Length: 79
Image 1 (tube, helix red, strand yellow):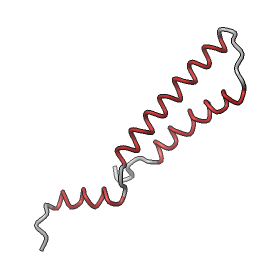
Image 2 (spheres, helix red, strand yellow; image 1 turned 180 degrees about the horizontal axis):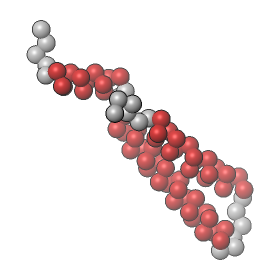
Image 3 (tube, helix red, strand yellow; image 1 turned 90 degrees about the horizontal axis):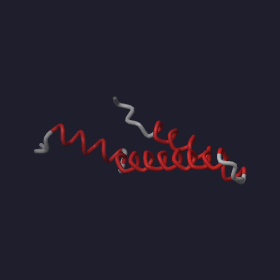
Image 4 (cartoon, one colour; image 1 turned 45 degrees about the vertical axis):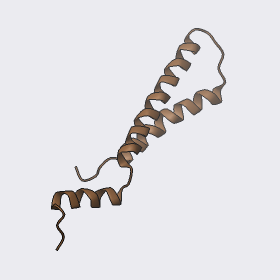
């Protein structure tokens, strides 16, 4: 029989099924924060009267939508 603690075995099995989950969540949070900060800066530039290309603003909006969705989809479904 295995001499591994059942809790440790359960944790290792869970990690093997979803490797680097913690790292992915940290990256999604960092990317989301960066996207929202970039959007805030772009909106402040628009408010000050500067011209911005529409495609840059659309990319920023897309990032603000995409990264939180990825964070939501990567959540732990057991809890």
